[in-house]
Image 1 (tube, rainbow, N blue to C red):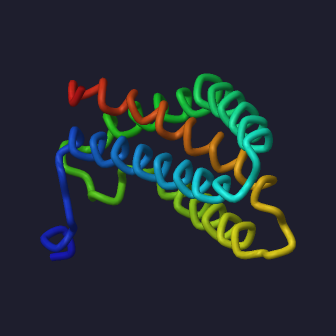
Image 2 (image 1 turned 45 degrees about the horizontal axis):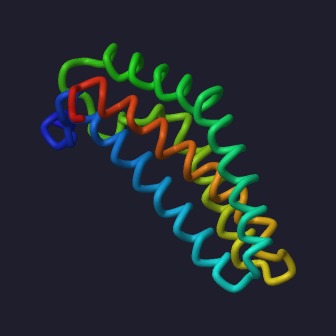
Image 3 (image 1 turned 180 degrees about the vertical axis):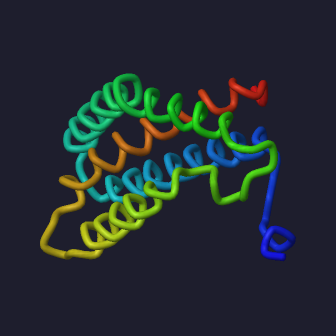
Length: 142
């Protein structure tokens, strides 16, 4: 009976959902950082961007590409039509909630200057965006 109400999708759609989620969160985080940096002088903007982009490239190629590859492998081992929410490992949802909470705390805390937070947002945003292409390439969406 419960199976009838389970929102199921083919594995290839879970891969697409993962890629779209990673890409959209990456763009969102990057745009937040860009919006914050508009209030600073050009030297601060350049330094923050160099740090953020450098960390983002390192994180993309040495961390998030491996995570996305493992996630794709995991999705491909699922039944043909798993629950649509299985695009992320169930344990990852706790980590996602923790990171969202930390991000909300950091960006709403007035005692932390945005130029300290912006490189982190740029790094994570860029890394997520770059790693999202692994999902798109897997099912020939790009």
